[in-house]
Image 1: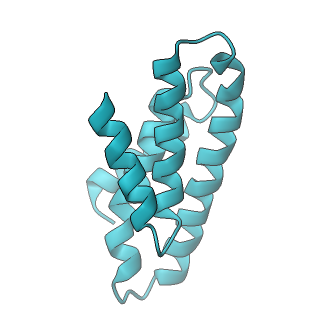
Image 2: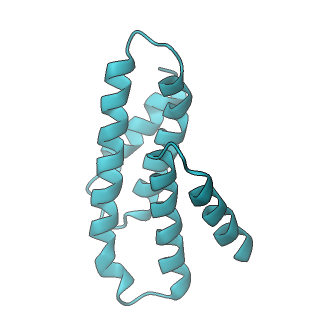
Image 3: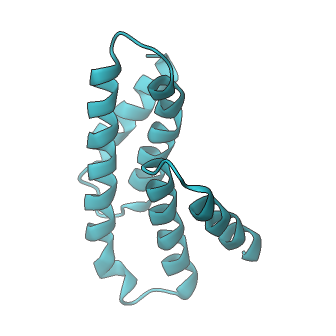
Length: 111
């Protein structure tokens, strides 16, 4: 694993309990994006990488659930941003994700 990926994982560990979940979610999703090419290649540690990806996915979902409280009294832009993060995580967890990627592009384009 490259040092950049290790730094991302260290960032996640340091911020996993933060009340403001946005930086944590961004770090988690970036770590999953960086992990994706390793999951697609033949690798002797593939099993470990799959479990790491599952743990990152689970942490994303937990952080989003923690962030729900803040959404009750926030602007629509922040709600849309959270939905974007949720869609990105779902796209990283799905094989046939063309529709999800299209939704992400539409949301990004409308900003």
